[in-house]
Length: 220
Ligand SMILES: [Zn+2]
Ligand SMILES: [Zn+2]
Image 1 (tube, rainbow, N blue to C red):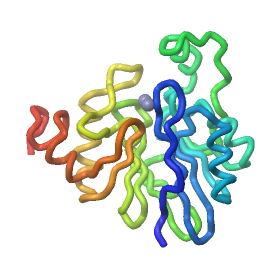
Image 2: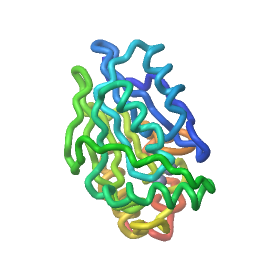
Image 3: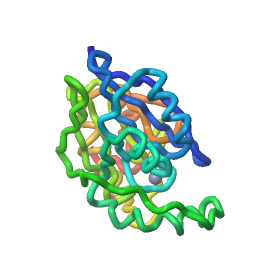
């Protein structure tokens, strides 16, 4: 049995998609983008009887990491972030104030392991592969199952949209290149973004107004 999504929770003030991805045989699981509502995520982990082996953020924006330290502490699982977003972690207090008016920011989560492109996260008998997709942030990543039947696209690719590139470290050209060179060549598969509804790679490759074949950025 392949890896499956045990739970999809919309968490925090910016409606981040937090995913509980697990192996049905070993019951090992990954918590992806614990953006807030740590208690709810903990209950979901316990409710499914899962053993969390990794806490992963697709990037360091606060809406994807606010509950990371809590889940790391309660599960004992290491927290993974791409090395390119380590500096962005320090933006946490200022960004919380800018977006939510929060002046008492928690400290950034402790990063146990810095990820690089091509790293593999083992989950029971399965694996998630790290694809470095800079653009929305310098260290944004996507995760794809070894079987290439599930893609988690963070804030890089959304249904009919793409992540914003105007925040610190953002790069519009890099974002377009990441999607076209690293994601579309994977072939068709379901895509689960960091915000909003699920989609598929084929649907976005054809129809996405920012990076699809008919868009003004497309050059073949
Ligand atoms: Zn973001
Ligand atoms: Zn986000």
